[in-house]
Image 1: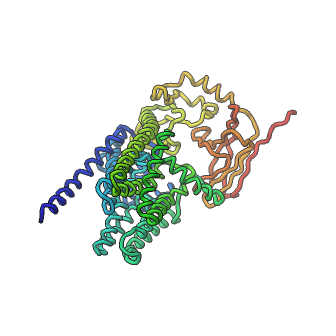
Image 2: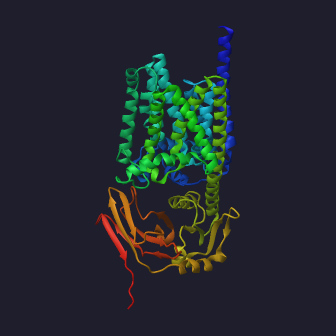
Image 3: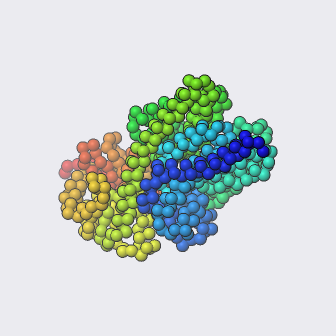
Length: 558
């Protein structure tokens, strides 16, 4: 072995140790504050699902998955592992979360090294880690499967390329197993097989031959998904009608672009311009191949987000951000191969992109963290509340509040009888039930006792309610609940359950997928002038009729 080869191997071993350490340290520096959070969003639901069930029961149980209309069994496995190791202590859960994000960063770097030098590969991985969508992945426990799925998908890609380059079909079979794992983590990784097909490695016929194990893995995943969900498609969230689909698809790129930014017009514009220049450099260097790969990668990354994009969340843009970060790294690598001026431009672009991404990341992180911190405070405080204590307008989602009550009363055996409400209509209907009232106040970023304010708040709110015209047409089709509310074109509508315990602000005409067929609701309308009107309880039983209309006309003078 000559000195050059020895030095190369030594550098490779150093890289194997150094890159994960740098990724972990950077992840901690960016997102380490997450370990101070408590359970947030829908974490309680997963804790409830795993309580009293074996992992095998939960893994493929239709009763678990048909309620949520999702099929993400590796997320349950990940949570269950944490529960066995640390119990109901959220801090270590967040450490696991950060390790998953760091692992995804390292895995992306490992894939990029097939085609890019170390510097450009580090740039692509760093840009991924600095992305606003990645900040969302790092903060919310219930989206851990995005990061862990990316690790599996990246390793599947690496083994697939090695199988092509080394002529070893067994590596393709191992790649298929990792591909199956990625899909079981999150369905957004289903399109990975299509991406492997178009990779510029080997011949098309060779790639097709190597993809047979992946086709078998996909068939197994779809069969399992159908068995537990009753359908291959599944899904949840707001209904996307056929007539709305073109508009939803047309708006998706803009929503994704917004999810890349942190809310500062100047910083976001600088980031967008820098990324476009880098991507353009990649296109110029590799021509139609680069265009095809980028467009195909973006299409495959965005396709799974279409059904849920009406209520777009930054985490949905995660894979699109990966595609852009990779394309940018290729562009900077192409520029480095030019002259001194071109190489300097590449370095400047990389520095500007990372700085702008970091600025956007910090703004987005601070905003999201404030929301998560409020949820954490509300959740912890709810555990200490006694009978007759009520929490006003919690930020924790309504369904999650029900699961929090389960955690408090059934799992932890703490005091029963505390409650909450999302709309002050509850004060008009059930003021006598409220012994003490608490609410989160942004000024002090803490929960305060608002009992003394209760009579005035009740008088103000209830006094704004009028007996005004109101109407609603409701329909139920294959589990999808839709509505048309009126008669006002302006103002704001909401659907209220439980006399204000739950409230959902909605568009005048919209729908939600996989809703119950029998329930009771109220319509809430708030006028531009500030007055309110509510419907009475409207019982909806769609077993009797798929369409129900309710109307309250204007009263005429006697």
